[in-house]
Length: 117
Image 1 (cartoon, rainbow, N blue to C red):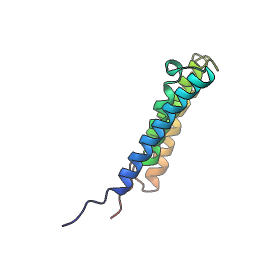
Image 2: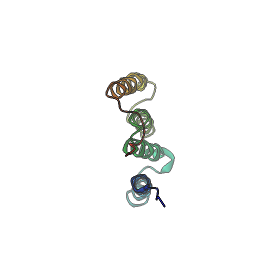
Image 3: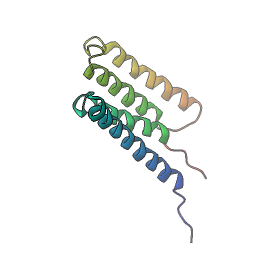
Image 4: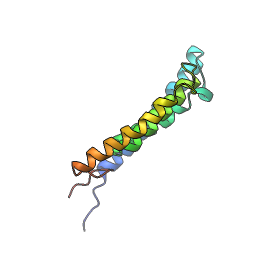
């Protein structure tokens, strides 16, 4: 009887859960310990964590777009800059993701988790 070896996937899932828990804990600690901004303005950190988990899983292009896009939203929510002035950076991330996808395709690497045969 052959067992399905899914240890790398479960390890990545556990890493993702720990990362998202750490993001939420960081948000709550800054809110209640240092009187910092609450979850209402720092919620993009959780979605940036999802982007990092996708990068660990091998989905680099979508991870780049999600992480960078929500980093822009986070900066706007925290008042670091106006989102109206940050749109060129949001537009520039799309060609970067396309270039990364193209280079990975030329190297023969498919997006997603690596399968071991």
